[in-house]
Structure formats: structure tokens, C-alpha cells
Length: 115
Image (cartoon, rainbow, N blue to C red; front, side):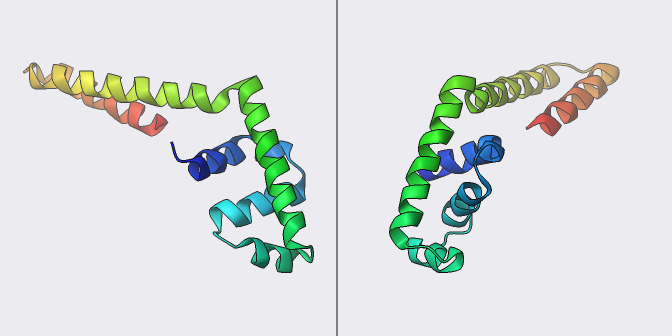
């Protein structure tokens, strides 16, 4: 997974544990695609300060993930759900019972909501 996407996902999960300023700067840099200079100007701080805040925030996000593992668990759960949906599709192809097919479709819909 690309580093920028990973940090953005970690911020969605753990961003509430960062300070307001750290969260805003991470959001601006990774989600709003602002440059260090633009962020510095918006927050009235130096470009170097923005860089330092980003690095410290990134480090904290990775530490939270290492300790708590929510992103890893979430990604594993998504893979299991996708695999289950694929298995249901195979069962659906080989089954002609209308009631069973209806139940399978309902299960698939519920699983897709979890993704």
C-alpha cells in the first residue's frame, strides 16, 4: 500500500488522538494536497515547523497502529468479507432453488454494506 494512502487511513482511524493542529496539518497535506508552504502560510508558521509537525504526527500514527492494530484488523476483515462474497457467488451459480438464491442475495447485500 502506498505510504500516503496508509498515513491518510491511519489518520482517519487515529486522528482524534492527535492534537487539533497535528490533525489539521495531516489532513491538509495528505487529503487536501496542500504543499508545505501553503500549510505554513495558512497556519502562520514556518515551512520547517510544518515538516516537523508532519513527521511527529506520522510517527505517532504508526505507533498507535503498532500498538492497537485497528487498520490491520480492518483490512483483514475486508478481505474475509470479499472472499465470502465470492464464495456466495459461486454457490449462487450452482444453485437453482429460488428461496436459497434470494437468501444468498440478501446475505451478499448485508456483507457489501460492511465494506
